[in-house]
Length: 415
Picture 1 (cartoon, rainbow, N blue to C red):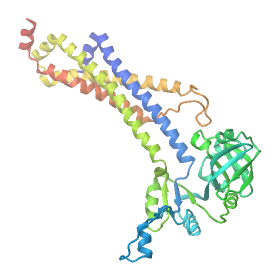
Picture 2 (picture 1 turned 180 degrees about the vertical axis):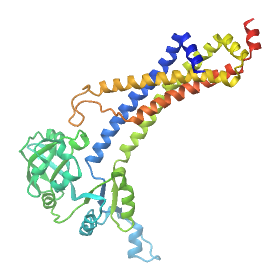
Picture 3 (picture 1 turned 90 degrees about the vertical axis):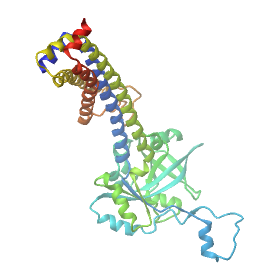
């Protein structure tokens, strides 16, 4: 049966090549699109996971409710009318019992490192330039264990700021806004309004403008002093052995703690939701390509069957039944799907390998000006299976039509 199927295909080489070309383009298109989208997603995920903590313990954010104040201070029979309803955040934005957290984290085998932070909104000034920024007070030696910021330093080392003193590490985008350079002094104004001079000791570049243009780091004690809040921390950043454990651990800790436990997935929820849209579009585009290729297979196989009616009549006359005739044309569809799919995989791999070496946009410190492509084995397996599936589905109806033909019908139609 396979021999006959191959003979049929070789007798119509041009038609066979046209069918395989459709499968080839569909499979190659899937490889290119999937490799590019998944490569960019992996790069961005790595930036998120490696440059930030996996869990954050923060003070729970609760808003003041007028009904709660009424219940606390007044009886049910009293009518209260607020001229100005109470509003604002309840309590403090700091962790109340950080020492208890430190003891717990020290003894949890799932934790690789943690660090207390104090995040503050500040104004940075250099001469007549003033820029709003987020200043993160941290321990630099713990920070480099939790994030990969040390690998993204343009000038200086992240640990140059030390554990104390008015030294600051800024993003290159923020540095350009200020018009400053390495070792310059800038004025930093905290929430209390008092400005203090800080020396720029290092510059980083993550390749993410929202961070490079707005974030700076300083020793935790210096930020506490700037805000006049000694011993205060706003969050504890935690790195896990396995980032995928973050949701499970957050649920566990939330049962006995009032503090807010934020996972890296929750922090980047909008970011991650964009990946789902990209994946949906990737499958839509690939599906459209394969549908077009499938219609090509269907149309050409239908023409082939009309041209091969005499051969079908002969085969039926010498004892081939309907199932064998159907099998004959399904094998032809399978051969074309496998052949076109394999060629598409090879071309897709060669093309993506070449594109991954090109610098096609201005050089970026993190991506080196190149598009990151993924070369996961699963991409090629899925692309090949889709090509074979599309060719088989498109072959079923023509093969079924061929199997229903009888020698008498063929003779009558020919006469």
